[in-house]
Length: 135
Image (tube, rainbow, N blue to C red; front, side, top):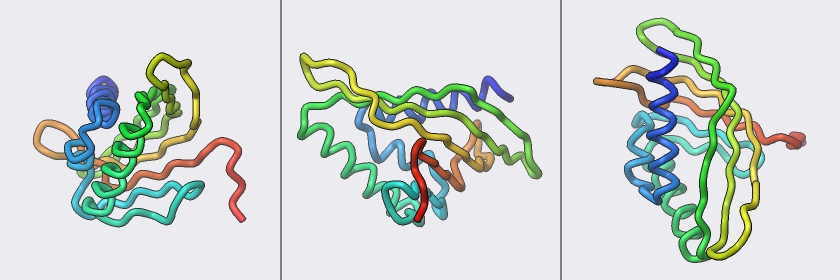
């Protein structure tokens, strides 16, 4: 199961890195929740997640930035009914054309994945930024 979950994340993050915002959003359940307290209010549902991903991809493209994500230290815990809870570290990097790589985010990502035909979808994602202290 670990390898399949790791492949899911490789595919999912690859979609975002290749600016395929709509396909990336399709890896989330229709009623998914995406929480990133350091940056925004929770996104509720796939349409909100899609709109946010499109805006992010468009900003990066307009700025001439290539964004890449790296996932590591993945923990996978099987749950009931084929669900999976995961926890991993994620690094987000950006590189301007002809420039140097910049690490701009280090987060802990906790997901609740639900089974689909041939894989999973994210039902709930919670990103906690390193250095973030809630008010």
